[in-house]
Length: 130
Image 1: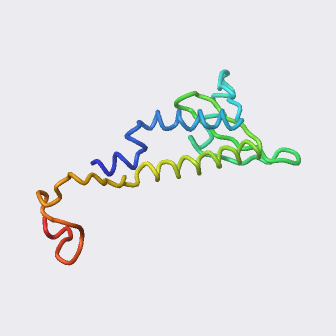
Image 2 (image 1 turned 60 degrees about the vertical axis):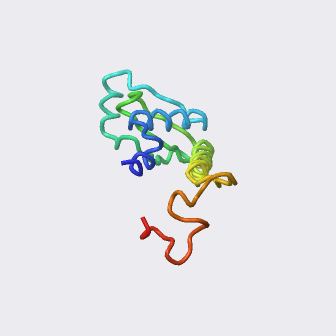
Image 3 (image 1 turned 45 degrees about the horizontal axis):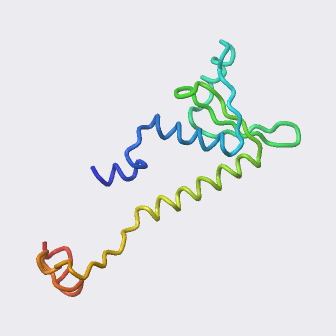
């Protein structure tokens, strides 16, 4: 259960994860467009939820992220906004990996012998000992 919890970004709900993503989208320069008319709502429901889509528009590409559950809106951004968002995601993934990396415990007064080994992992010292 703990491993599953860690893999879900600190046990955030799906709604919280989507809201965090949307905060990142806004910070990257995406603009939220609410589904505040029956026509917009109908169109929003046709898109795959919580996924990016590309839409060629003239000589550039727009990136569209639909959210029919949390904000009931579309996020629309250009290539630069999408690039900033991707950079943020990569930086966040790196920070998450670093957070999960075990800290080195170097307390000289800690008595490892009480826990079944006296100095480290070597032959006969692995998990089978437990």
